[in-house]
Length: 381
Image: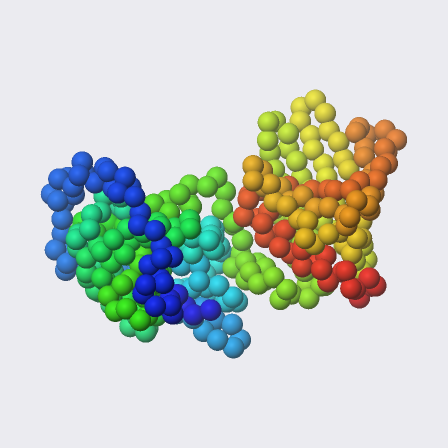
């Protein structure tokens, strides 16, 4: 995927894709504009204040390299577009003084909104102040800082042209020029606050550029727990079907050990996935509170599960999976208390619970990949 999303369709078709955002989105704009006007900065002041917090992101695989921009939103946290690092195996950040540091973690990630928050050592650099995209009006002057074509700290300006919605994104249409390498940089208002994340352009219509409203970033980082994966973990599971069966099973075991913990309503739950041999595996569940505890060991063959019937709960970070058809292919041994005789039963479905919704989704993708492979590979490897 290109490191700057562009639209190849003609302008008429493009505009049919996006619906104009309701003016109700900006109903509070007038109430805040007097205050903001008092704190307006000159363009040179905006650049001077913000530039040290803007970075260049260099991501790569063995065969290709991607370039993008990003900016500091809090200590050791940098936001950029998801597509800047999508399908990449490693990434580094180049700061304004030329210092290069590796991306260590993925904290929050939303492919649907094309946003990702990366864990990087930011040292004593100040985060940018997040503004309010709903305070903008058509005609307002806005600014962008990024690295178009690798030209770091390029400063451009323009006006707000319109507000649009595309699926789950609130988009600010502007005339601020951006180009490949600008993706993920900040869109700034005349007070130097971030109001958007520069994202895309219409290739056959000069002067039409889009930024994701900063409100989408605020909502993303307000989720209770982020993905909290190392960048290598995130990269290894980012492209379903890429890892081998053996690599996938090893990853699932290690991942579930570290992230398969969940506390709710006084119960402390933990569960882990383990490969027994070949495509035979088991899930171990345990839970306890002040009054009770229980343990379960659920054994199954991955090839007996349905790869099309893996469901991540919308209310809990839980992955539910099912046997093919209506068969009972999951064998459970349950121990309610120490010293009890285990109760045994055959099940049609099972589950694993994780410490975040993002981690549940990543495990579900890996599980689906392993099940698909084991549908044809039913022997030890």
